[in-house]
Each structure stands twice: as C-alpha cells, then as structure tokens.
Length: 260
Image (tube, rainbow, N blue to C red; front, side, top):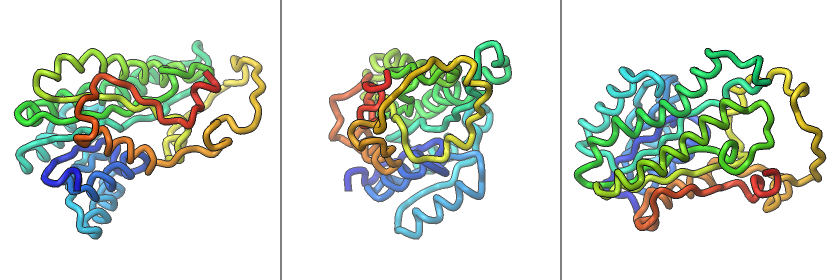
C-alpha cells in the first residue's frame, strides 16, 4: 500500500470528492482524519472506512472558524504524532447572481469557506508536517482558473483563483521543509456541491451562447466522478508525484478548453 504509516487530513470529507478521497487514501494504508461540519455525516464515513478495515478519525469543524479548525487539526496531529497529507477540499458554490445583487454577506460566506478555509487548513497543519515533509493538495475548480463563461459565478470563481495563487505562492516557501503543494481543478463532477448553490437572476446577465451537445469532449457530455478525482488526489499524495509542486492540474475531460 502506497500510504502505509502515513496520516492524512481531508476537509469536506463527509461527501463528494472529500469522501471519495478519504476512502481512497484509507485503502492505501493512511490513517485519515475525516473533517466535516456535520457530525452524523462525518461519522458515517469514518464508520464505513473502519468497516473496510481502514483507519479513520472523525473531526468536526467549520473550516471558516479558526477556533474550531485549529482544535480539530490538533486532535489529529497530537493523537497520531504527525500529518503527512492534507487535502484542503471543503468548499461551497455560494450565490451565483448579477454583481449588483451580490451582498457583502455573500462575499464573506464564499470567501471564508473556500479561501480562508484553505489558508487556515494549511496553516494549522504545517507544524505537524515540517519534520517529515509531505504533500498538500488544494481543491480549486475550472471556474476562475481556465473557464470564465459561467456568468454570475463571480465570488466562487474569485475564491477558486485565490486558491491557485495561494498554492503557487507557498510552493517555494514550503519546499525547504520537503512539503509539496499542488492544486487540482475539477470540472463537472457528480457531487452534492450543487445543493449549496443559490442561483439568482442569471438570465439578466448571461451572454447568448450556443454550444453543441457534449460540452465535455472526452466523455461526450458525461460528468466525471468523485472517484476519478480521488485517484488524482492519491497520485499527488504519493511518492509518484515526488518532484511536482506549485502546479495546477485540471481534471475536466477537456471541458474548460472547450468552454473557456
């Protein structure tokens, strides 16, 4: 197993990409700290991993709340004595709306969870990684990084672009500790994130655009799966990517190249 003896922290681990990645990392031998803000859903994932003879700990925190997050990460780091892999995955789509209808509260919610949450996750995990090194994987998006056609997704796209800049800015700083940090940018993936998207009056600002069927060229329209993203997470967490840092990887079947 590729990650035997390693300790991994997965935020947003109770569903979607986070859940699939937590399961994948556990199957490869890692002890996974599954971090979520919903105790029941988080515990279900941990219980399922343990039933499959994997090792996991439930960690409850909202990534946008520093006091909650630092305690959750400290719990995992102190109990296991180390953290080798961090998947900063927790995020929301937030409100998609015309610029003049977005509020300061909309801005704060989206940026606090998506970007502040990433910053805090890495910051608080860092003391447990400096001795042995390791890998940090940030989950961004095609939106705001290579695709800008989802009019109205301004706050979401800006939060995702910020994650890419954060990854590139910290890659050199963390390299001295043998810590790699990379960012993955999924396109359309079958997850529950659309459930926390509030779309408001987008028809007013949407630019007329006709696209043929099959907006995802590689699969003629079929979205990717969380398990496919989890496979990429495993690669970036493993020694197979030992010479890769500060790099974004798009996993979208060519969608962002097509839509732009």
